[in-house]
Length: 434
Ligand SMILES: *Cc1c(COP(=O)(O)O)cnc(C)c1O
View 1 (spheres, protein in one colour):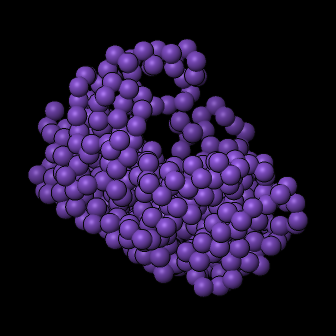
View 2: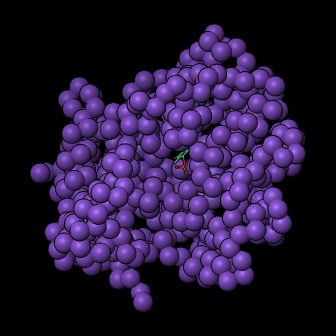
């Protein structure tokens, strides 16, 4: 049955059925697992999530940049059903299957650069990042890894060390993995440095404090850190420095990849060709899958048996990824991402003209954010919370992010309609007046 693409509230948020489930959750699931909204989903698709009480919410989050092709994309649903009927698992390391190869070949084709590439598959973004670091260490024989201010790379031991923000990701969870160093990021709204100046600052820090690392890892647009788009030239100059010194340049495209930013990978916006690309989130229409794709000679540095995992490249997730890639290409979703970005940005800039608490409107494609500030530019996380809470109560799923918690971020599924986007923005605009 088609899920109607309109916002509808039939109860308060949360409704009675969700309230019951929230109570069960509180006794069954630890409080450490956060939730944005106190409602339980029963169906989702297009730009709508329907909850247990029959409320239809507008989805501006895509389950954190995952359901780029929608949460029930027809090709994905059909591919998953067919693969589940054939077999659910054999383990690629025991008796391999073609779906894994096909996904590897697609990623070797789609990631930036025309050099010979290879791909290995895993389950989560953090697992892809960890393995990219393992491969870079094996290739260079060095250990140090450089990550950036405001970075987010995951919640496992190594990726927690790579992540910048303490609360909530690292607090009480140390000790952290050694040989991780932090360099300053280009953050145009706050550091006011142009690309060359920000690059000098970063490279000087690396050369003085680390020497030559195995790898530099960076998100082309930072996700959890606040949708920070570095100044033009920063990423290419950093990649040049890495190439000159045989340091592996790892692009963490877990959030930015798969059409989200109006290109298949965000690296493309600046002609960047990373040595290794970590992808996940939008890759498989909602199924858990991640990948490391990179230069064949670097990827082959790890010894036979050194890479893998029981579920890595699960056949159902692979079938879903092939269907998601076909959907992105045949429905030209990179174009749609740019249209969505234009609509969001135009409306948010108009709102900024009227409201100087919106310090910055930024992003690329369907990855757009506003940074909220007090007079003088100090971060205003309370305003972000107030607007987000108002939106949630009105049936709009919107996420916050940023080192200071003062960024509202918009990551709708690329299957959302313009009508839903306008309706959601009307609600947000009202949220700034409460
Ligand atoms: C979400 C995210 C990760 C971690 O992915 P998980 O699948 O949650 O482990 C890593 N890097 C970036 C940039 C992310 O946005």
